[in-house]
Every structure is written in C-alpha cells, then in structure tokens.
Length: 112
Picture 1 (cartoon, rainbow, N blue to C red):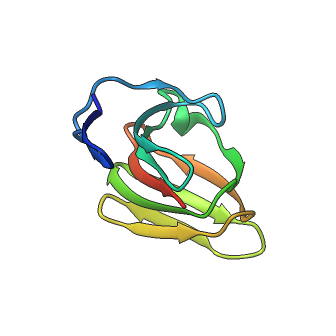
Picture 2: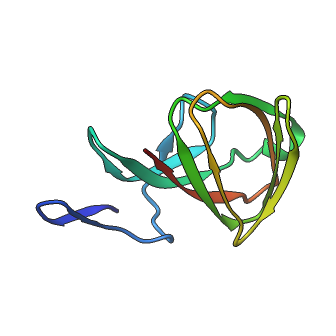
C-alpha cells in the first residue's frame, strides 16, 4: 500500500500486495506516485507472459530496474536486450519494442 506521509513524500514496499490491472499492456501495477511531473511504481508480468510477446511503444521516457525474473526487450531497429534482476535500463518516449518477460517478472518503473 502506498502512503502519502507528508506533502510530496510517498512510501510503499516492493512486497506490496495492492496491485491493479494494467489495461495498457496487461499484468498488474502498483503505483507509488502519480502526478503531473512524475509517475513511479512496480509492474508484474501477467501469469501467461512467458507464452508470448507484447509490442510496446514507450508513451513517456521510462527507466526500469528489474526486481525479479528476466525480460528480453527487442528494440525496433536496434539491439535485443537481455535484462535480469538488478539490471537497469532507460528508454526515450516513442521507442518501439517487443517485450518477452519470464513468469514472475517484476520491475520498478519511473515515467519522466
């Protein structure tokens, strides 16, 4: 559960259990902060994620930190990334990609 502890201060946990469906790409999301300047939270891949690939065009600049599992991210016109727990990556708005997360994949994300 995210708690606003003071003006401009938000606290949660990577073990949070209050996730909501993510209509944009499937899976579940836990939002830490969402305002006009920044969005941040945790995303969990859907249970059947390992069964396919998900095309995704970044709607914002986005930075991720992989918390659990692995993901292959194929960048249109660029490399294919192999990220695992501890990997950090950053993408510019408009980059087109295809994601193939493993079962149990979780990431911390920041839109800026």
